[in-house]
Image (cartoon, rainbow, N blue to C red; front, side, top):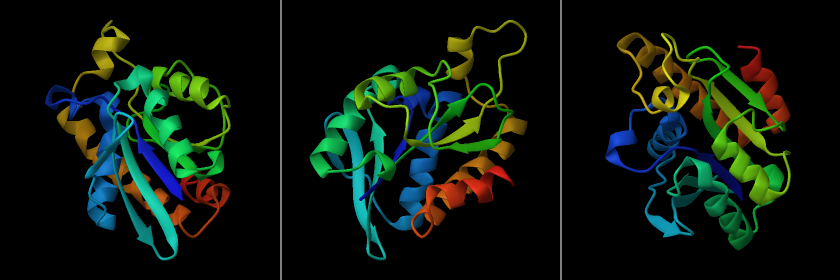
Length: 187
């Protein structure tokens, strides 16, 4: 089973914020793949379906960002998902708005959701799709910035990044993650 996780925060007030880009990609995949997020377990909202012969799970942890691992790892254990069958989609302050970077391993880079996953999974070796949100300008504090909405101009870039991220996930059903990285990191 392939598990695709989008990181974000639950609640209407966070829906369109920078920190919720992972949730936005899961919503796009849910529409594309006709996999409704209609199940709940371990404080996560998820849906499962089949793409060809591959079983797929789409997941939004509802634990709030900094506790994401508390949802993801118990679901992986429950469904028997291996580390290499996991991809996590999340926002990245160190990439320009809308830029994608796919990786198979690495540190948390200061991202509290990824810190939680590494802590609970016990490894840094899992697939990731990082979506750039850029760094705050004008002295805005990072916590305020990541919980702010995108500007009108940025929304265009984010929509493109959301589509590309969903495309990358769909490619992963038929290719290795390394092949998908080579396609999308070069774009």
